[in-house]
Image 1 (cartoon, rainbow, N blue to C red):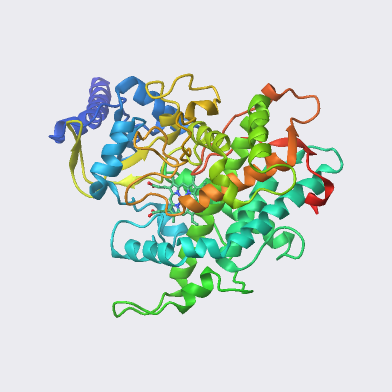
Image 2 (cartoon, helix red, strand yellow):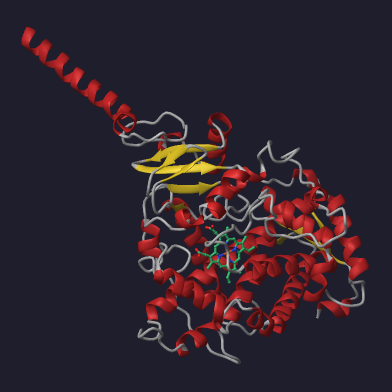
Length: 483
Ligand code: HEM
């Protein structure tokens, strides 16, 4: 009997000691002075402290422990910040150290073994793939080549909304804006549209759209160390008219003694471009529309500006966009409150370094909390108020949508990994919004007050509204403009 009690006590003591040891181990064994952070559990680290909106949890850690917080996600060391100076330190001053990406399950299984641009670790393969995008898709010359296609898609957008507005029923703006972004992107990449009359057809279109949403959802889940569901993707090739991006990739000669691009490299690039360009701009447009319809005062000011710059006798052109300073403020404010992704794509440090006197070990994952940055009360006043006027330039100069030198918003990141598609992304967003606000008045669905429009978000690599935005559209131009 006594022996059994002694054995149980010994066993319990052993497990208690093990738990305490695990708890203290990082501090006992590492000479590092790590940044402060919340206490962590053995094995799980801080994973159990994260809910369904981790960017909000990360922001509250920063509020509690300071601008640079150290976390353990399972056994992965990570830092997070929502502070402009620390972000500048990571993305600019120490860009060389932090410009890599972690080798996640997502990168392996969803991005052809990190054979793409966005999820590839720093190295010659990433450099080559990024250069191909910059030189063969995202040059000013190539963007200009597609200006007519974009104008056509902007007109399809207006026709689509006009047709849907005929029954005086609420329009699902997520569908409309998703089709607009997807058509714009696939036309450049594949020479093919998926939405609207005379296109690749609704079945293929819906599958395509669904896969893109899934991809972002999975990417978001996985980089918090979650499980990987089986995923498949369509590989649509299409050729019509001038050389699309796939045509260009197929004709690229080999370089430095290398073979031309392999099929899998082309697939990785195309998938990256579709994923990076479509959801980001569609999600931004839906948030902007939601906030503007929620604030009729803002809608009125946008329309006043459009009526002055464009007038009622023609449609908005890309050349008008630099003059639409108030709309540009609206887009900046949308990026402040609802950045397309709550974190940048996670970065990873290539070697040990220090930030603000704290040691950051090699291989630390970096979560730059752009959602937290836009709602950091040390950086912005009245953080929960949608107030575009805060971005107005007092000297009348053009309002820049990208980050300024102050790093107070960061929609496209900075440094080596900054978004290479930012100029195109800005055009997709501004053009979509300008056309929709110029051609239509917008109201919440019947019976709902503007202020009742909800702004609940769901977490993922991009961060859409929880519920698709529904709204009533009333044409405000002469009928011939909708044909
Ligand atoms: C409103 C639209 C867009 C937004 C808000 C956006 C935002 C971003 C952000 C935040 C990143 C991560 C940067 C980092 O990890 O530091 C990124 C990366 C990237 N974006 Fe965009 N983007 C947009 C449109 C586009 C477009 C139109 C393209 C191309 C056609 C594009 C291509 C890429 C690529 C390839 C990367 C990965 C860069 C790398 O890892 O080297 N994006 N984007």
